Amino acid sequence: MEELLSILKNLKPGVDFTAQTDLIGDHILDSMSVVMLVGELNDTFDIEITPVDVVPENFKTVDTIYAMIQRLSDD
Amino acid sequence: MSYSSILYLLPFLGAVLLLYNGVPRKFRWCILLLASYIFYWMGSPTTLVFLLLSTVAVYFAGIFLNKIQDGFELSKKALDREGKKSLRKIIGWQKKAVCACTLLFIFGLLAFLKYYPFLSENINQFFGWMHLAAPLPELKLILPLGISYYTLQAAGYIIDVYRGKYPASRHIGKVALFLSFFPQIVEGPIARFDETAGQLMEGKRSTYKNLTFGAQLILWGLFKKMVIADRANAFVAEVFENYARQSGAVLLMGGILFTVQIYMEFSGCMDIVTGSAQLFGVELPKNFARPFFATSVNDFWRRWHITLGAWLRDYVFYSVSLSKGFGKLSKTAKEKCSPFLGALIPSAAALFCVWFCNGIWHGAGWKYLAYGMYYYVIMLLGMLLEPLFARGAAMVHLNREGGAFHIFRILRTCVLVVGGMILFRAESVGAFGEIVGKIFTSFSPKTLFDGTLLQLGMDGWDFLAVAAGCAIVFVVSLLQEKGWSLRERIAGQNIALRWSVYFALILAVVIFGAYGTGYDQVAFIYGQF
Image 1 (tube, rainbow over the protein chains, first blue to last red):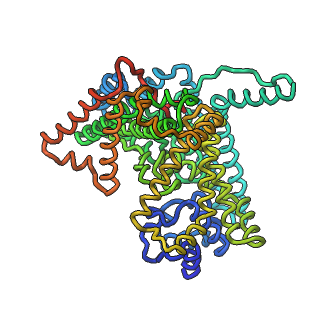
Image 2 (cartoon, rainbow over the protein chains, first blue to last red; image 1 turned 60 degrees about the horizontal axis):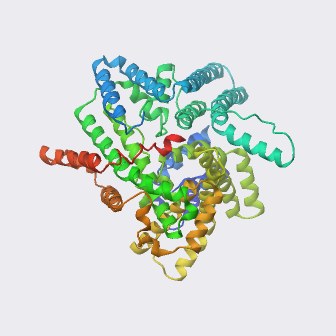
Image 3 (cartoon, one colour; image 1 turned 180 degrees about the horizontal axis):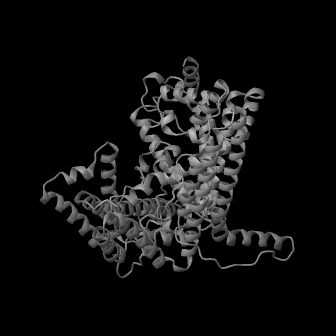
């Protein structure tokens, strides 16, 4: 979780990600930042996030992103 | 049959509603499908075959993808981890081949019918310059009604099945109705299978709420289309067809009025089609969210033609930017150059594909390609310069969250959008260049006040009607932007007030709508794509 928060902080400095409830709906993460985030997550956690995984439900909060990482790591 | 015609609004919609509610629930989808094919046949009888071909192709491809996946699920039980991995790879390739062939077929139809004349003309011209014989014959092709819309829906369906988002439908009627539903076949919105197909098959009875809300939206759409857009059309057509004779100020006015026209017309059409679907209890996806309150070009495209933007994002942008090739390239750039470049490469490449597709989707011509590139360059510059802007703003202590800066950003977006609209409406890229040149070199502001504007297809009353219409739409949009649900509020009023609002809108359309002598019925611009 710490690694994820650090990646998010680097991507969007100044945003308190733990307090956010809808990162996509509130336009904190747009499609550009999602692509950058996916690249970082793939490299850091050695997973493969595909377009099927790029849905708002998976990127809504820090917890949903973390849950997706764990799910893909288990696959 | 135009969505704003009496033929559509009264006899057609009325008859379908009566029949729909008159048959048992399990047959209601048949009425919608029959109505959709009749609607299509009335609009474009000779090209119905292309819609049928696309429907059959994606239906059988979907079933085939299901079979491949089911086969994998059965076989994998008997395999160890390595065996599963290698089988998954083989299955992956099989599914990819089925999906690619289907996409090639449906997009092939679109490409041939929509782009062949443009491509053959340019290729032949090129051969002419080289003093060689023209290699491609000239073909007079008819563009099937709504092909740009139903092809994207069909492609979205098959890609979703391929990606495993949902299993393919085994009901060909469901796929056929999803692709042909009459309110959305001409101009969209471009729906996803899991959004609307279930609703279409459900056969909900038309409730009082659906009927009143649907009728409200249709009326609102007619107001935007007939009172504002069709009235502005005369001026816009005159200015752009004779741009060489106009001053820069008049051309700019033409650009602004065309922006107003296309917004009122397209969003008005979306209100009519969404309202029509609502009469049958079907909620179509939203295509507009008050785009002229956008604070950036990116924000504008999140609010304008939302379903096209979302389609391109999900099936082009993410497919390209998250592809293995760009992943590797990005990693190399990150290691050998800079993290910024590594992050920029996949986004910039994917964005190029999105805007290339967006441009050519709008039409086969250089100006549409230029239109796509116009937005690509703006967005790319925005991405590249954002860190610089942020640093500059911090240096001069500019409050980027303040109200004044917010208004500045809205106005800046409007200027860029009007620029794009002038390119979109100009007859060619060259004409766009001349128009922009005139705006900057021979503006001649006096032509705005010396009566010139009144000689170009709109008189003083026309301008007044358009301005009043725009003011009403602006106030309604502002209230919606602030979170008011006007439809709910109107529905909650007593019967006298409620009907006063409806009658006022009906009267506005009847009295101020542009029709009768001097006005030709104006075809929906987005219906021609």
